[in-house]
Every structure is written in structure tokens, then in C-alpha cells.
Image (cartoon, rainbow, N blue to C red; front, side, top):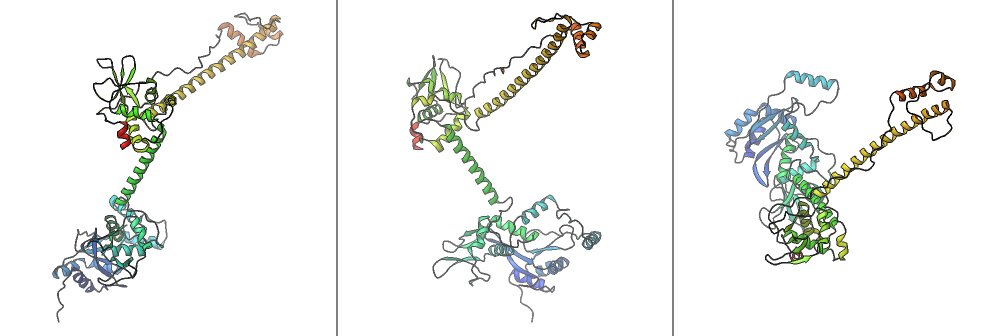
Length: 505
């Protein structure tokens, strides 16, 4: 009796492989499963379980394709050889491109056999691979899944990890290997690492109340890499897994870390401002183009155009200006100068509104005259740090030059003292402060009769021929640094902000 034609791709490819002598199922050579991406089935895939299956599929690749095409469900057989080894790695599926690589040369096989017979240094497993293949291999080996975790990923990719309600009304995750049947319970501790690493996620594809553990985009890509490269599984299931290299979860964690670092920096900047409420009002008024300096350095707050505004104490503006938060624009036709924010000032207002708005009580007025620290990481802080380093270098250079000149002066004075002592000995001078006449030098007879040292005699005759002037000491003070120009104002439109806007925010 003729066999019935297959009705599904899985039956067609299973028959073709069994006709080659391969065994299907647990403990056999292969099994047939569906491949899923984002919970949707994209095709049928054959997973080879033994080396015999890979070798048979590689040898009879054309026959497998012919048999499945005749059955009405064509499959593609891809053959790969990795690391120059003769063992083929096959992929049989009814979707995607087909690749057929040639086996390595016999000389390479002989070299491999010789290396196995005579153990040497382990070869580089990435030798001969392209850059893309090396990157894929490293991503696969970085997964560090156990056999059980890989099986859970395969079950999730086949939509077999389903939630069920137990007698207590609690959701229980089951691995339903057969549709319509309740499979064994899967403990939450086993799937939690895969969920936290971004490989699995709970979904409700058929509406509320029908939950299942679905494979994510990272999980689908990781499962393909695991099947393609077959890394050594971990001996023990890890409770914490790393996300897929280059995947969405890794990008999310990096973005979260960057956002956390930015928020910590903003908090630190806001806490270091130490503004009073009045200083915050001045900054917000400057942000809204409401501060100006009239002729005679009269500071005015002008919340409404066309009105004279309110006169303010100029001394309260100086700490903000010297800290690099505010600056004055050039005078207009009426000799008035606008008070505007610098880049540091705009950033300071932003972090103040977010982290410090209206949290500082009003303090005594005299505390507003205390110098303020510049914005942490701002342009003013960078300029001050650079100036501090330049001043330290100039101070070190001045100090070194002074001490070098002092050493030369002490050496000169010691030489003069030796020459004067020789002159006083020869001439019989007893006055300790009597100066030695310029150009005096002893004769050979005088030097021998008074026992003068030859080196001192040489110094006296050298000084008589060419007197050495007294070395001068340089100014030990560091040269004054020229005054730096203030930071420029921020270009662009101003913010119409006020204290009540700040409180509302």
C-alpha cells in the first residue's frame, strides 16, 4: 500500500531523513521543530543531534532537497566547516538562504591527525574565520547557558512554555511538549535568569488570561547563535546571565547606566550650587531677560517691558557673576547692559529646577555676598582648573630659578671668601671687613712662602684677569596672571521664567 503524501513540512523532511537510515526522536539522530521569532513561527527546522546525522545530511544534501521537493515541501540543506575541521555542521530548514562549503583539504586532515597523536599547544579556534564569524562565535560562547537553559529557550521558541492556573488560582508555568496537554511545572527560579537577561518575556498573544513565556528578539538571535556554534554548555545553571552582546537588553542597560550617571552628576551639581532663594530669583530673572544694568551700575529687575522695574543691590549680583553663572552684554544706545546667562548659568538653572527648586530656605542677606563655587564640570571650573595648573607651573619655575640663582650667589661668596683669606694672609691684614683690592694676585714666591693652595692661587689670578660680577637674585614672586575675559552669554531665545513658575514646576 502506497504511503499517504505528507500534509506538513515536518512530516516531509522527517520521512526524507528516515529514508537515509537516520533515527528521529529522543536518543536518535535528529528531531524536527518550528523556529520562532517574536512569538511568530517563521519555518520548520531540523536539529541534528549526532555527528552521524551531520555527515549523512552533508553527503546526501542534494537527495534530501530532491525528496522534500517531490513531497511538495522543499527544504534547503546548508553545510558548514568550522576551524578547518573535517566534521560538517548542517542546517536543514525550509526558509532562509542555502550555503554549501567545501570540506578541508586532506593535508589539513593529516595535520589534524598528527596534532591529535602528538599533543601540542592548542590551536586558535578562531583561526581561519572571518571577522563576522569571530564576532558571532564570541557572542555565542558568551551566553554561558546550561543544557537545561538551552532547552527552556528552545521550548519558548516553540511556544511550549505556557501558564496554567493551579487549584489555588496561582499562575504556574508548564513546559507543554504536546499541544493540549499539561506538561511538567517549570520553577520560576529557572526562567528568572533568562528573563532578567532579556532572552524571555511574559506575553499575552491571545488576549488577557492567556499568558505564555515568549522568546524575545535577543532570545531568538541568541538561540540561533547557540544552535549554529554549539558552545560548551555550563556545568551548572547560573542564577545571573549576561545579556546578548550587541542586543537590545545590553543597549538598554548601557542607556540606563548612562542615564543614572547623568542624574548623579546633576544632583551633585545642584547640591554644590548652594544658592539662596534670592539668588535663584536673580538667575531666573536673567533667564527671562529681566535683569539689566543702567548707567551708573544700577541693577534693575524689569519683569514687564516698558516699566522702570525694581532696583536691586548690585552686591548680590557679584558672586553669581564671578562664579561664571552670569555675564553682562555690551551697552546699548541708552548705555544699558543686559545681564544674561552663560552656558554654566543655563545648566545651573536646569539642574536647580529639577533637583533643588525652592528647597533652600531664605537665608540672611549677608550670606548672599559670600563667594560661590563654579558649576561642577562647567566652563568656569575648567578654566579655573587650567589657570591653577598654569599658576602652579609658573610658581614652580619661579621658585626653581630663584634657588638656582641663590646657589650661584652662595658659590660666588664662598669663592670670594677664600680669595680674601689668602690676600689677608699674604698682606697681614687683620681687619675682618677690609675689602680685597680688585686685580690682586700673589706672586709665586708669596704663594710658596705663605703656603697658599694652588687652587686658590689659580682662582686669584683668574679673577685678576677677568673679575666675576656678583650674581643677582631674581624676584621670587610669581608674575601676576592677566585677567581673563568673562564667559560669553548663551546665544538663543530666553526663557520666560519666574519664581512662581519654578514653584509650580
